[in-house]
Length: 425
Image 1 (cartoon, rainbow, N blue to C red):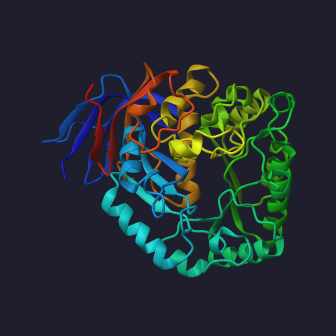
Image 2 (tube, rainbow, N blue to C red):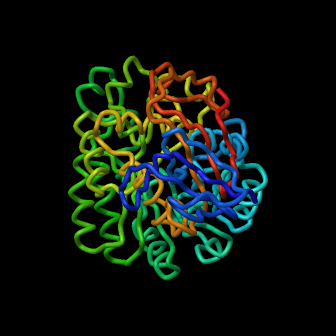
Image 3 (cartoon, rainbow, N blue to C red):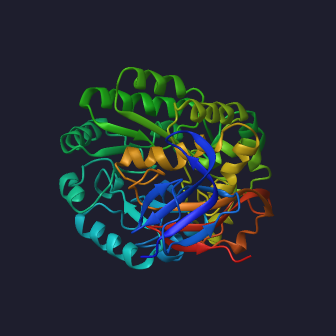
């Protein structure tokens, strides 16, 4: 493999929380040295003062294989991820059928390795069919390569069955990823309840439903000792419960989507279904509280929660339209909104987008440390552009940022020291 020497770089180090000029040497697919001399015969990459950071580790990406390849395939997801600086996708099991058997997990693992430019690791369903009644073969799925277990947004109403799954996951050392939401209160909701929901006549869910869901899961974690990650904590009312759990020493982490950090409930506007998400967009106060929680480290992970939906499922009345938005390519420029607003520094962002998800999943990525995989993104945080959704590499084009003026462009992406994307323009 070619030895690369990145010079004239602005190194974004999420471990040291530093942002400083330097150089990086890559050999045999790994980071070989920082700020060292140019190795003999190395290919020099002049970064021209642009930012060089660990590739994004995106926890919670929906891919349409199997069952919905018309929405997103491993190939199209890999292309979009590479163009967005995402070097590791952690794929969700909410496919058709759900990934709940070792055989299906082995199939999608093989397909992903064949078709994707970036690394893809799969989560498996916690319960069979994601129905919350009977746990999956967690031990066998771990042996087949499952990196974590989740039923996604299918919150279980059977607490006893969930407790059994937590106990078994604990015995195997498996990570459980929950979607904190009280299922009865949140059923059928399209927006967050409040004046906006009332004005537009849309069914809403109170943010307290999220806190109630997290409180239940925290009780189960305390009872079973399971390792737990909340996929999305989006309400200020939920944060005290999360803080208490962490202070109590529970093995708990939490995430939030980039959309919930950069958009609020008023962005829905005149029933714009590209802004329909799960959970729904929150108030501006909730958004700011989540941003502050990321900055303090209370919320550990930022993810894209990439959820492709075809035109037919989005061009429906708001209440009936599918939830979710694509975000693999818009993840980084959306995050730059937080940076340019002065809310979060680049090292803080990369701590949440790359280092912390890798740490939680036991992966070596997300670092600029010697000996770690050379999964890197070279980007310019200041380049302005207007997003045209039809230029996105994802098969589905359901982005809430269509037509928006954004800043931050990926210039090149490397996986294991190999360039998988280079911007030509």
